[in-house]
Length: 367
Ligand SMILES: Cc1ncc(COP(=O)(O)O)c(C=O)c1O
Image (cartoon, rainbow, N blue to C red):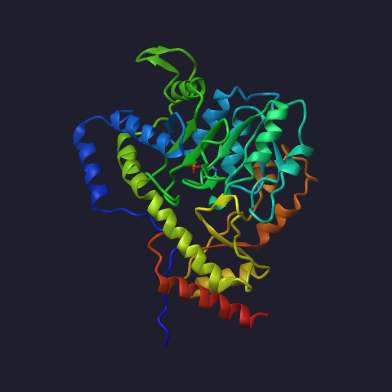
């Protein structure tokens, strides 16, 4: 009888090195916004090729604080894809602005610039392209629209650490960019965490103040702020993970190639535009038989995910905010057909083959 493997969707890398640095921080007696946070911010800024990086308590907080720092608020509209994690849009609502949901390009699952043009209004203040699954959005087209209409561009790079657009790392393309360090991401701080990257010193400084009670000095509060800070344990882990990220991304790309080779022709496999460097945060296929295939894989020990089954414009939380007649064809089609396969650097050739064999078997039986 064939051995049944148990393959998770993603896996966090923690080694002795990481455990040791955590213990060092515990012994240090300084836990919040210390020298490790500053060092991590500098390294991450260098990694993205920007001047400033500001750590926050999550990717969601990074987007929220960026919108505040850009002055987005009541009366403003922000163009966002509906096919993303909820946190692309919820901070727009939290700052009092209105998200305007736009359809994606079905090839890359990222914001379609032609659809963005149709939704521009006098109130549009910003555009949030999402580099979904690790594939960059079509940034030149989006930046051109933004320049012509005097809009800010906030890159949601929460899934795209190290991805490149025309040879340039994401995170250094829009006015600001936001990353998440949630455990499933290409690099993590083993908890919640995020970072904003920007070349604009004024924006970086505002975010630094907003994240820390609006402080100028210890007990001088220049503006009304929040507690959305980062801690030293996370920074120490982040520094270690950032060192390994480029090699991990290359392994993810090799795994994607291996999947492509076996799955091409069976399902719709992810594409990488010739101007893109995809970092495969998720390896996402599309098939009409998605739900049954997911169930079949689960029975055979393979965990998969659906990112995302309910578009943001169809979420209960956005009822009353979004026109109930709004239809976004590609978004809605993707929501019922996408399936994320196991993807993490430790995935073995044997495991990849096992997943692909199971998919091929299922589709052969269910033509
Ligand atoms: C596209 C996208 N935007 C925003 C977020 C929010 O990040 P976090 O979970 O760190 O708040 C995530 C992460 O889950 C994400 O995938």
